[in-house]
Image (tube, rainbow, N blue to C red):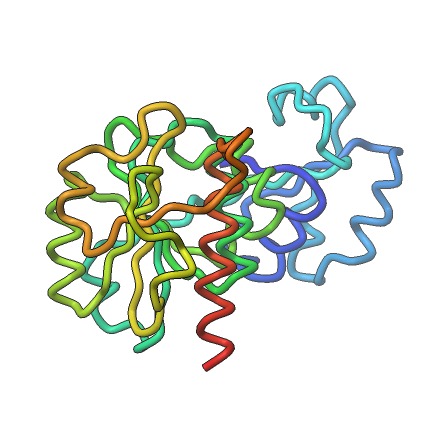
Length: 239
């Protein structure tokens, strides 16, 4: 994968230097700055390119800040790896979210609010893309992705590991402030428009909603996720 932008590249250098194959920059566009902050082991991996060649590497993205990195993909984790997380772990399931922008924003929110893993379905869901990594603004290096074939079966397995599952849906009878999110928690979110699928809702322990204005009740899914992540962190810190 080729990632780009100052924040994603900085955090990749900080956390996964051994996985970096090449570092691209545009010759003459303050490229000496990149050279100055790189560790010695990576300086030999710098490739200076013309502007046209650089833009080909980043698919003509405009917000690249003159740096891109060719790096090994982070491997997806398997569900079994969540069995032995700590007693106050928070993870998330995304049911049918297909927009890379939303995925990137959710990953960034997760990194900021101690959500360690995000579970997606291998089919009918967005996968990690360079644009999602860019939007995550470095957060991708701090959150592990888990790919599963069946979300409903995965929820049942997570329950056997001790997780409480909380689905966020406007049909919920309780609101987010009515439940305690202590212990091992899995927060579940659906795609905009279609929401969480019925079978997934039926297998969740709680269905809750986020209270909003009666005159304009709708929230973008990434905004809903941020609120839920923050509330889970707030409750755990208050304990």
